[in-house]
Length: 387
Image (cartoon, rainbow, N blue to C red; front, side, top):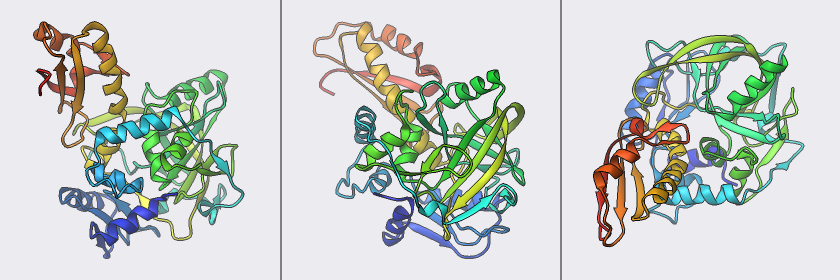
């Protein structure tokens, strides 16, 4: 099974990994150097971060070719986003259940609640108006209270100091519904944050997976083998055995704060966040911390772009119902970046007789999977069947 650190090794061997050996500050400096690395399409490893014992790696998943490397598909030099979408769709349709183990690399070091201190984690502060340092590449694992299925998603986590963090969850996510349910029942909710898990889990967590299926099982299908998991220290959640870090949280749904962070569309975004207490941290002895450059960072948007795969598929189905003369539809974002930067290309069938202006207006007016199409794209291009 392909692990997080396997890609670090492959990138290094291919000359695609920059290494910074001098000590850097997690406040602003790390992000500034990371931005320069992304501009060169290079991954970057910081071996020394001020006030932390852990190295930081970033800018690893910035292209379809890097995705292929994560999935051990080096034999696919022309691997495309469309192919990646097909792989994720196939994995959602045929998931592979997890395999629970009794011992795991992610538990080589265990720090319990009595002495836990998140200030040693090299969480970066990227921008001047951010509320503070954030975890940006943490996969949050929770349990669906309706069916017991494990759910995974990527959430921004504000570090509040010591053993306190704040979990930001968008209103369209499954976890938001779980938290609301816990609040109504007057109980807390457990979440486990996996940093540096199997690359396939990072991809599955960004995808739109039905509520009756687990992203952990989808990750197994992407890897071609069951994802190995182990029981968390302070809850009954199952966490990825090969993760670099696992941070266990107890979330108080009624304790909230507003945080601000530079978002994917190159603007600041404010969100309501739930305050949580860290109940345990486990990690590898030589753990490597993964950070995603916030804002319009290439890796950030490359992973976020995965959610658009399902939007394209749903949009194609919606349009074909009203316009049978439409042969195909593609969404194109180059570079992969969510925001008003995308294009939609619509191909008409041979001899189609259609009001193309009305077609474009109808597409712009659609709302698909919680997204307004007019906010995602800048133009629609309609072409004949021979293009």
